[in-house]
Length: 295
Ligand SMILES: Nc1nc(=O)c2c([nH]1)NC[C@@H]1CN(c3ccc(C(=O)N[C@@H](CCC(=O)O)C(=O)O)cc3)CN21
Ligand SMILES: CC(C)C(=O)C(=O)O
Ligand SMILES: [Mg+2]
Image (tube, rainbow, N blue to C red; front, side):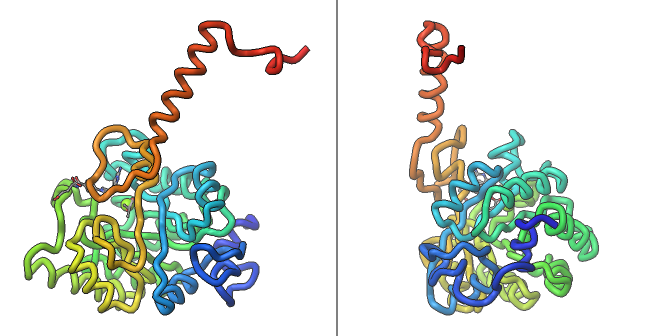
């Protein structure tokens, strides 16, 4: 096992004490790998925390330097990194390769990898086989899977087997062909179902749960009722944590982005401008200069 994956599994270094050796998940100065126990402690302190997706080592290393405590190797890599239309075609081989790169690029963040569509729906044994690959081959510290009550047996077996699980309820994009991309939990019946899903994943042993595209008031109610942290995306301000897809947040995603996205930079314009400047320099003979040449 590499040093990195050993640390990711909590097999080396101290696993007690404050998060990453610091006092808080974000802004803590420590360098050891954050664990799911640090995440639980943050909820007890009432501390909010950020999560970003990452799909490659270079980007992940930037977010690690920024102090982002949890990174998700999301199957949004399908549409944000690999050029598919949706997350549905993403394979476990692809997730394993991308997750290994993100683990190699980081030293402090807890790395969570999405189990892709088709890698856990057959049942708990398939889920365990798939999650084991992400833990052993990529070195991630936790996995995420979609579904509430419908996935509780998978969550139970993974947790029993020593693999921390982040659940994901509300809008579950792997089911786009059945449910579309619509707000979930609107109306009394749907709200009760979301609450049942939230309790089911907590009872099954999940260490946190993503709430995607659910009304802010309902996300607040789930957050108050649960002992485990909620991670919101399009779920209002009351959740314990917030997650965004990194290419959306930095203005790199081509085409439409969901309305819950806040854009913190326009990397697409920066990269396009730089590529055009390079091209013009080459065409005009301005690059390379003497200083870029060897003799
Ligand atoms: N680039 C990107 N960002 C994401 O946040 C994201 C992905 N891809 N891929 C995986 C899932 C899919 N997600 C999605 C996809 C579409 C909508 C969407 O169309 N939302 C509508 C609102 C729909 C409604 O009001 O019912 C929107 O306009 O935001 C939302 C989340 C979130 N995830
Ligand atoms: C949107 C987040 C929660 C996700 O599942 C992904 O990026 O794949
Ligand atoms: Mg996902």
